[in-house]
Length: 487
Image (cartoon, rainbow, N blue to C red; front, side, top):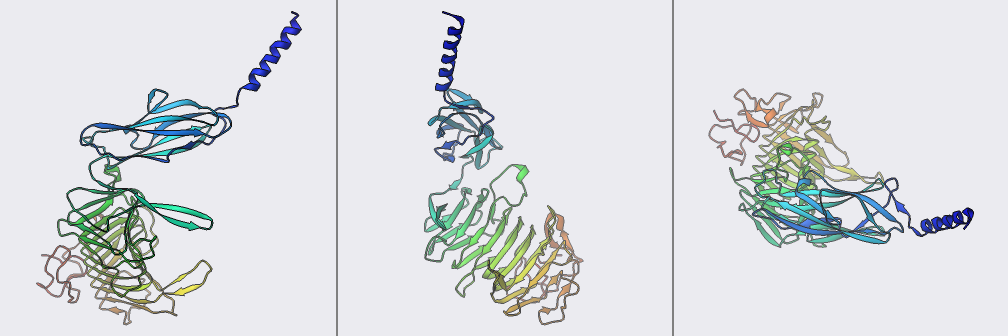
């Protein structure tokens, strides 16, 4: 055979070989993968060292082969391993998935309950890098022993032609939480209408990132729902983030909020410590004359946004300390009725620059079309309270004169704009812009020093004991704030 004939045959074979082979996407070309699940939940808690294996199916729905790099990422990645094509470890490189085909990945979590670094929720990701396109599948496992409240149903939200599913945990109609076991919330729990969640003294409630408690079901046509928090002095109910390592200690914004929805009724908080979230208690608009919530002897601190947010709500708050909030300690927004007695609002937030005051009062809102709607502030009474912070003024008034804007500071120490006219009926025996002389505000110790102008500066009320159950009637008149000075 002549050389040119041999070359022609070889060339034709080469063309045939490459024309029959599918295109292969390497690291320089992006491609999208699809997964059987976007989250793998390992819902078994170990009392001894143990492991569980689940699987994930990965689909390549493209008309070409792809190669992807797979690895486990995240703070808790050390607890997980993957097995791809019989090779186990924390990553697998250049894994080929044929066109319109799929592969299985086996995922193992290994838990040692004696591990001091173990969290209630052990969370990581499987990360896929396909030609530079990054996709992730969440890995979630239960760590320490607790009662876990994870999504078990969903409600639907219609946005135009789209229907979105909001997954949440539906509680039993009348459910009690006790101190025998920690409770961990992953996502949101919802208290339905005509139902009640009771949380008894000493209970420890841990909430995961973007998690919260919603009282009243926004997906139901029936309004209602109740939460009762029954703490006691020395056995407070504590709401906090679920990260236990020291890096997260005293770190705000770890969870969302306790949200009292429109129509929720008879809510009470006694001796609760609410900390490290975004909003402590969010009380929404109600259509009844009963208090949305009665809050007694509580500490709300280190919230990334707001301590107490009322929106057209009816709140009674006594012997309560709200401090260290990224925006406001208290917001009385779009009207409502509020009464605060013997409360300490002290905002010495120092994580970044705060430009909002401790207390905001408002009686209107503006809709998306720029139309102003009046919502009467029927009352916002502050009695025997302290309002202090690091700004030059810690009270803001947003008043629309077309509506009711009724407020009073009665026997209070307040930090207010020096130019504000306080010679009106709204101000009764106030102490204006003086240092309350706290024991140690940097450590959020708001006991009063002996030199405090707040001592014996109050008036008699029905709140006869302070937050520590010291008797205010022994040396009348009472002191301002949540603490009575004890010599």
